[in-house]
Length: 154
Image (cartoon, rainbow, N blue to C red; front, top):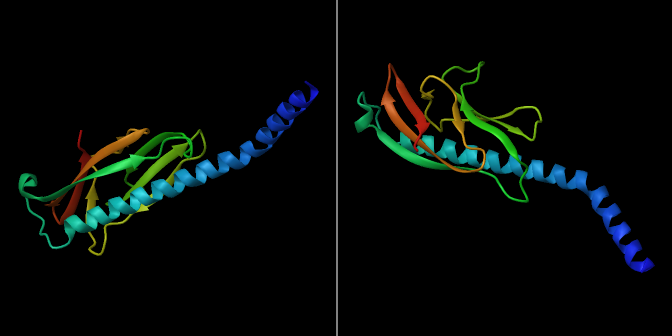
């Protein structure tokens, strides 16, 4: 009986000692996965722009739908908020802003690929669901210059 109690106490002590390392690893994994999703979005923007011409009518514009996956599960930290926003220091650009478990907000720059274009988020931040998959629609339009319009698709 004493051996069992000692084994349980040692297991609890080891688990307690390892929790900060586990949380750090989960946060790092989440940041890496969100960075990878931002890279996928950047490649999709570059793909829509490459080989296409911007048009006035959004219905005729080159477009793509991207699935953006916010990490979930045991290996990922809980994401409280995630959104596509226009950075104050770079109008016409886009960053992915997210917050993990009440920590300070983090941002990841989303580029536009090899061609410099303006990004339009439709007048404000695009809030994404923090758990699971989001669909994002990209359209390449001529809005006083080449512009990629981004909005949620469902």
